[in-house]
Length: 317
Image 1 (cartoon, one colour):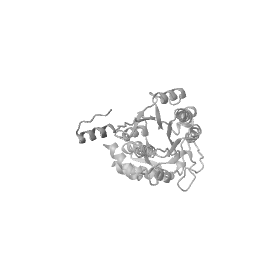
Image 2: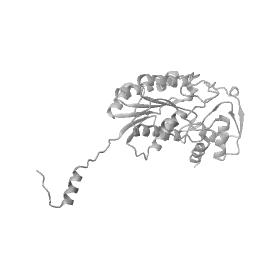
Image 3: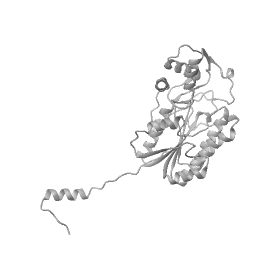
Image 4: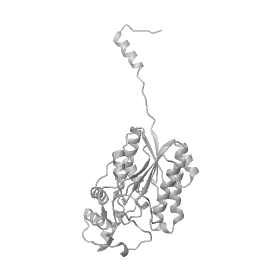
């Protein structure tokens, strides 16, 4: 039985109010591994004011050992994880030549563990990889479909990590990047600023070319991929490349670092790879084609000089 007040306007407003339903979306949990590294730290900054329907859970080895499959599966299940962003990696390229077991444990086995946990809990994975999966003998930007042929333990472990992940969790995105640096951790930019202030001269390899990448830009790209997946309710799995725009050598990169840092007392001289032998082989040419990630997710790829300037300004402050 319906009762009316006799006031038509009040009755109409009351009936309208009863037909209003408030839906409150429950945020989807995103597990970020390797949270204390360069990329993980930049992801913390990139998501600090994130308003989308995602809740980021940052972990490093102290909170979650991703080389332990049982621990990973339990964590993903207990926290109802819907996305896993793997920023954890063994990146000591030369040391890896002698530390093979640990390198593979982190770069291959852990990636597989995350994939298994994701599959068993209906989650999706975004995994970061490297230009070192290529041999560096090319003469045009590498496409995602180009054959891989890593020449170092580090490169082989990352390539096998990609394959292991995609085998157990085809619903994954692999993002290869290169020459990563940031205001966090140890990296080439920080080292060159330190040496430039300490030394009168520096010899830097000039016959290896690639694209420097500010980790802050990569972090923003990853967030864009997540937002895109949520907005369109479609996770576009596959391999993608992301770096900043432009091509340079380690020598020219160093010159630019010193320029933006205001270092004028250190003379930087170009040398060849043969003049600076290293334990692990480096790609001579590792420029990555970024067309796929730009067209698929509408991400930005700033010029490497612009992003370097921003990073150096932060560092010298």
